[in-house]
Structure formats: C-alpha cells, structure tokens
Amino acid sequence: MAVLLIAEVVNGELSVDSTAKALTAAKQMGDVTILCAGAGCSGAADAAAKLDGVSKVLCAQDDAYGHDLAEPVADLIVGLAGDYDAIVAPSTAASKNTLPRVAAMLDVMIVSEITKVVDAKTFERPIYAGNAIQTVKSTDAKVVGTIRTSTFDAAAEGGSASVESIDAAANPGLSSWVEDKVAASDRPELTSAGIVVSGGRGVGSEDDFKLIEGLADKLGAAIGASRAAVDSGYAPNDWQVGQTGKVVAPDLYVAVGISGAIQHLAGMKDSKIIVAINKDEEAPIFQVADFGLVADLFDAVPELTSKLG
Image 1 (cartoon, rainbow, N blue to C red):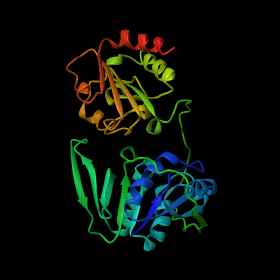
Image 2: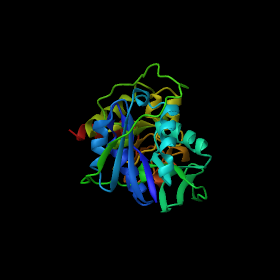
Image 3: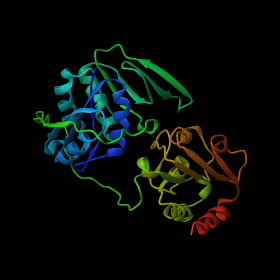
Image 4: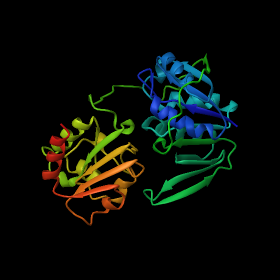
C-alpha cells in the first residue's frame, strides 16, 4: 500500500516531532512517501529524508503554500492522490483544515484522530471525549486520515531517502493570507514539550497564574490550562488543554487546581506521568494521577518551586 504523509512544515522548517510520530503510524499502513509543501521547504525536505522508514520525499516550493491555506495545499494533494492508496497527516490545526477538503474533493470519508493502526484500512479513534474507542474500517478506494501523534513514538533518524522537487499545482485563488499573529515565548511549544504544568479554575485569578509560570520555568516546562481557567480569563486560549483545546502527552504532566473534567482528561490522559495538586481529595483528577497531593496549591506550589532551586 502506497502512503502519502503530509509533513508539518512551519516557516520552512520541518516540525520533526509531529512528523516523525505520524510516520510511525504511516509505516504500519505501507510504503511511505513524505510531502513537504511550503514557500521554502528544501531544508524541511532534507530533514524528512533523514527519518527512518521513508521511501521518498516530495518537495513543493511555492509562496501559495507558505501560510497553511487549505485551498492551494488541498489542490496539490489531490493532484498527487492518484499514486497513493492512503493520504495521512499529523493531527494539527493545518491538517484539520486541509484534509477534510481533500476527502471531500476525492469523495471519500475522513478518519480523524487515529490513535492506533489495526491494518491498512482499519483504525481506532477516541469518541465521547475519549470515554470510548471506536474502530473504523474504511471501504473507500483511498484512505484519508489525521493521526493523533500523542499516542505514537517518534520514528528515529538514520534514513537516506531521495528528495524530488515537484511543480506546484495551480492556485485556485479561493483564499489569501493577510497576516499572522503569533504569541512569542521562550518556553517549549505545548504539544511537543516533555514537561507541562497546567493550572485550573482553582488557581483563582490571572495574577495567581504566575505561580504556575514560576513552577514551569523551574522545570523548563510548557504551560497549559483547563478550559475553566481559560474561560475565566486566567490564561490565554492557546494554553488550553483538553477536548476543545490541545492534546498533549508529555513525559510529565503537573495538574494544579484542576478538578479533572472528562473534557480536560481527553487532552492529557496519555501523559507518561501525571502529578495532581488539589485540595479536594474527591477530585476526579486523582483517578488518573500517578502521584497526588491533597493540599492547598497556594502553599504547595511555592514550596515545590523553592525546593527545585
């Protein structure tokens, strides 16, 4: 089975973590070719060629692909689709925008948020905020799907695939880029960080969220937040972890003042080690935590931060 994996390319650079994890899933489906599309993606293509298990890398350089617009990228993918039995991508904001359009243009279903590859046509995916796992078997001629990378290990480097430059597809001109507004931060990116410290409604205020930031800085961690904290204005929207936010699976997840609603658990329950700090010993978060501390966060977090040096 021939598989086309759409790499995540950001500002001309390969997002190695998400692409390598998606590659692990794609390799279970068949022979993998990676597509790198961007305004300047030669460096990303070279990096993708070094991933283990890649047969070939296609590099499509065009300004139309520089800002993740779904329409031109979808047209490019559909133009290549005839050579492949499956088209997959890591489940990112860009792919969630692009691949449903690809599926519609090919008149096939889309299998979203794949967490396990049973075989080349059969997959598992979470439903009901992760409370149930659905097994989906595609009967379409082509499989189109997004891969939840938090459940797969990253493919190693060591490959030496060839890189082929391909022509851009005609730009349909249905959308145009105006501007990007990106929050600058020295902290690790939330979805790929090895350690995440998250705060919930129990933190109490935007000012008190500095306790979370201080602990995160000591651990070299990314910062997350529950939807309740975001809705209350304690934290920005791009910190939100959960069913309607970002899905993370770090080596260490520290939940501070988070009760553990199922919508939040859906976004972090695959973390390797979960530590919970909450004064309510009946909080649902303790049911999934590896280590739990029943304490007032305003006492526990400053003490923990100070003991970290």
